[in-house]
Length: 159
Length: 181
Image 1 (tube, rainbow over the protein chains, first blue to last red):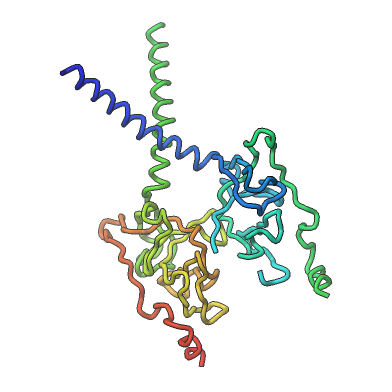
Image 2 (cartoon, chains in turn blue, purple):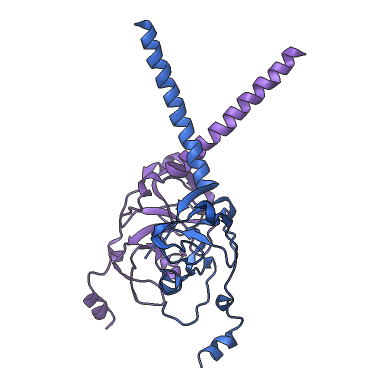
């Protein structure tokens, strides 16, 4: 009887130690360093999910890279999504403009306008799955999406 | 010599165990449950910092309450500044999505708060950088719900979710048309 009581007590102690230690360690890592996520939808085709719903890409989301809100044009980022009518938009201080690669099939800044940097979640740096799609995701800005150089160009463009 | 080597090894082991365990536990608690913060500025006077810069209030910020982005009109909340993501601001929730707000000093007289957004204002109108300057803010920027003043001791209190009657949302679109006459 004493032997079995000792067993239960040791088990509970190990469980509590594991739970109250392992969970915060894992949560901190997944929140602040990196996590993985399955990509759904067609808005980033052909870069992500070129096969449609048959095979979803799994990407590595790097939180550590965006801890100081440093992003470059062309980076693929994940954001907290929420809920554009002007032809030219100047991106305000503290904001970014994001678009899905699959124009016309993407709910992005063209719908909800510039996004506050505070909503930035992570930088998607690699495709981890399926193995035939292992690759580093390059920060590439399509040439037709380069920012407009000057305000004169806006006037010319609207002629 | 063997004895002192043993001492160093035990010390390092305890240090690593403490560091790699205690830090994530503390970080997870402070990020997801609650933390404290000193309030700076006059935008929430007289509710917070009535004494100005001489004595800043320290408030309890409750992250757990806003984990599902549930806020009520009148709550005092902290959020990431829409203009500077490295800064947090503390304001009162005046309106929720779908409400129509009569603005103070905003370019539009009436604003309907879009889906997924809230309208926040400092209690000290005219001395506050809030939605009247930067418009509705996305719920994704919500950081915590400020529930209590913890310091100084003479200001210990629970912060009530109170909406000043003059800041109630406009009831209907007809009221906007009447208001602009």
